[in-house]
Length: 160
Image 1: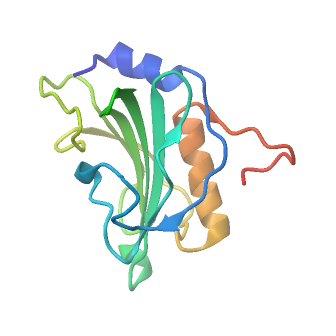
Image 2 (image 1 turned 45 degrees about the horizontal axis):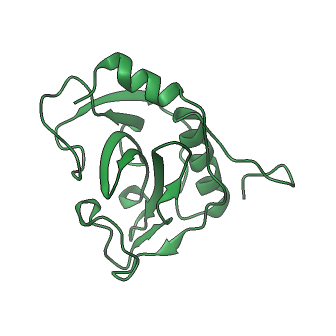
């Protein structure tokens, strides 16, 4: 849907969000159905306005063992009630480390859809962070904020 240049421009465009609070998944939170944010192991933020037409969403999934846990951050372009994913950053402790799925050079219209079969780029391996541990989750969020060029002002200078 987007060209490489358009995706790059979207990612580089400065964005700002205020406050990140993870809550257990609930069917009553009016989240897009295509994100499949149901289940007792999923914790996610609300859809966060990031300026202009950008929206961001962060989630982590618990697992009965460390390798089954996951962290994801989404960047969307919003038009009315429609969301078009620009990128999704994933971290899986079991494989790949950080990688980013991009909505580029794909003829399919992915409006209100996840990024099935999208290009993914390895961002690199890092130390093994555990999305269930708060300080590690803060570090994961910080990585995503940097990847999506999102700043988060705080009167106390911290992330949260």
